[in-house]
Image (cartoon, rainbow, N blue to C red; front, top):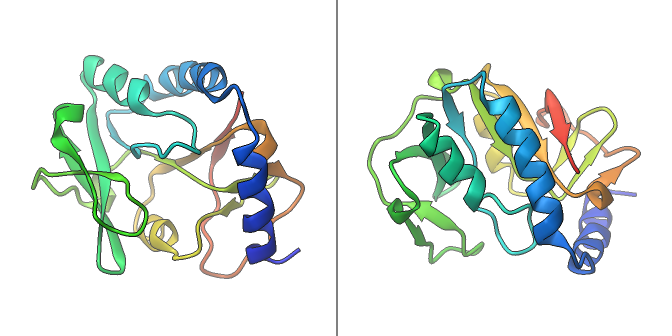
Length: 174
């Protein structure tokens, strides 16, 4: 199955997951446990279809971690430090994601851990994004520990990969 077919199939599967909140909590616990060993952490403000990240963001901030969230600027993604979820506003872009309004841009080499969204992940830790390559371009610039988070239904046997695709170091699901 090619990437576009897999994207469409996974979107349907995700739409039919009923207990996302409860399952997100189990994933959240694993992420927080992992994050104890890292200081500069990038992650994302989840969309409705994704593993919920708001509690993760708040807990990381409570733990004294430096937390960075993405902002899409043209064809690139950049990460900015936030002090609270109050630093986020709903973007007007295609994806309607919450983005930081702060101006404290982080250099990719300063991040210790990047928690990535994905439509699907495979047993070899390959990631299928939404198709624009924002994360792959950014991940290519860093040596950060890369972690994908998803629901178990988003785990597939294999994903078609290209030379530009960046593999995760770990994938966490419930």
